[in-house]
Image 1 (cartoon, rainbow, N blue to C red):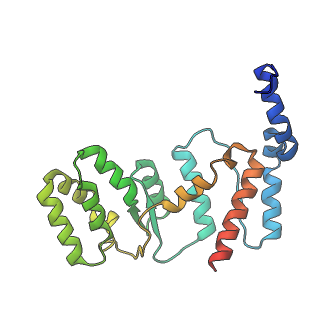
Image 2 (cartoon, helix red, strand yellow):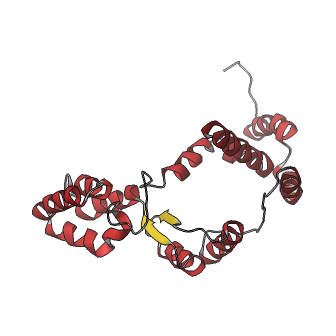
Image 3 (cartoon, helix red, strand yellow):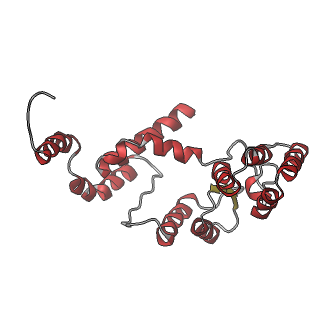
Length: 216
C-alpha cells in the first residue's frame, strides 16, 4: 500500500507488539486470573469467584459450572431455567436444580422446526402459540398448526407444551421466552474475545455492572 515490502511474520509481530504492551501477553494474564478473582471478592461484597481449566464444553464442565451456580444462588422459589434442547445441559440442570422449572428457548425451537419440516409458517405459528398469554389464543394457533401440518403439531406436543409455551409453563416466564440475553453478551464480546483473558474478564465485569446500574 505504501510501497514497503515486508514479510508476513514481521507484520504479524508488529501488529501484536503494541497490543501486548497495552493488554499484556495471554500467558501472563492467565496467571493473574486467580488474583483478579480475589480482588473482586475483596472489593465487592458477596462476590463469588471460581476457576477451572477445561478444553471443551462437556458434561463435566457443565457439572462444575452448575455446582458453582447452586452454591452461589442457594434455594430460590419459582426459579426457571431457559436453554436449548441439548441433552447434557438438561441432565445436569435436573441434577443440581431438581425442583426448578426447565423450559426451552423459543428461538432454538423455531430453528429446529424450520430444519425438520421445511414448510413455510410452521415455525411462525408455533412461535405465536408459545407466546400466547391465554389458553384461548394458544388453542387457536395450535388448531392452525394442526390443520397446516399434522407431524409438526405432534412434534411440538411431544416436546411438552409446559416447556415451550408461556401459558402452560408451571411458573411465570413473563416476557423471557428466549436466551437472547446470552446471545446479546456474546455479540458484545465479539472483539474483546480475542484479547487476553484478564482484559476479557474486566470487560465482562464492567459491562454487566453498567447494565445493572442503568437498569436499577
